Image: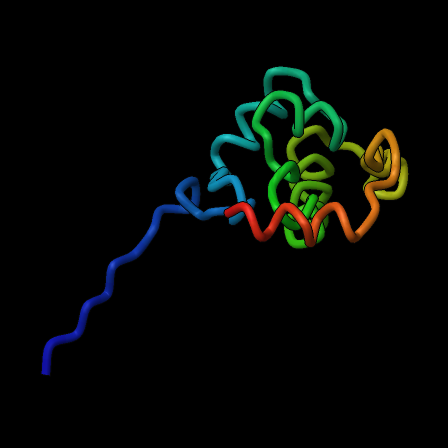
Length: 99
């Protein structure tokens, strides 16, 4: 029986699955001075994918606290930016016919 034990280094661990951002990319951004979730988003795009940071924001907060030596409670939450204006559902449904 063949066993494949492919191991990732700690830095290759994917933090943001939507944008495929690794732990090392986030840590590098923190060490460059980006010590907020918004700063990490701007530098790496982590948290800007389909889930909008729902799956990776907690890990990013923990990494900022660890590598920037900041209390996690003092970190500002990520800014949520809803669409500029609401889009009627019928517009979305109508557009699906064109695909």
